[in-house]
Length: 109
Image 1 (cartoon, rainbow, N blue to C red):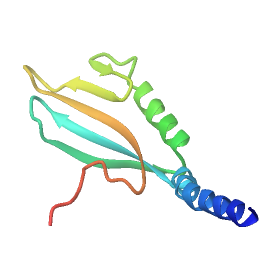
Image 2 (cartoon, one colour):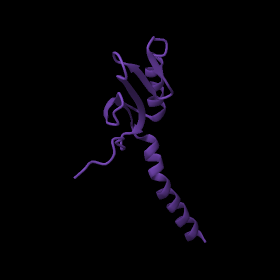
Image 3 (spheres, rainbow, N blue to C red):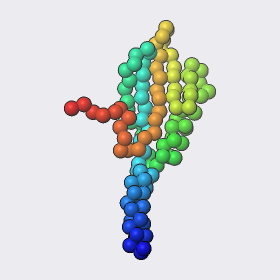
Image 4 (cartoon, helix red, strand yellow):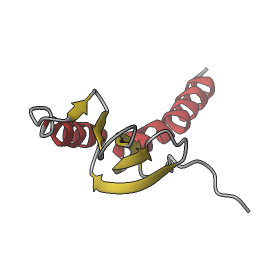
């Protein structure tokens, strides 16, 4: 019985350890920029932050600074504005991800 309890406890510690590491890792605020009607986008790192909550606050603060300016459309996670006449516009989408994740997807070989 004691052996079974020790085994279950050890299994729980091993199983939960990756979750703890995930919660403690650094987070990165990425910006994905899209121009006009193009489906192509460019990614860049805005800032590395110590945790998810700090990253989400930084994203919100960054977007909030544009809310009251004329010509800018701000949503929960993005900022869009026109560039000149016609359908020329730019949209920046802000995304917080752990530093172990690359939002651009897998790299080719």
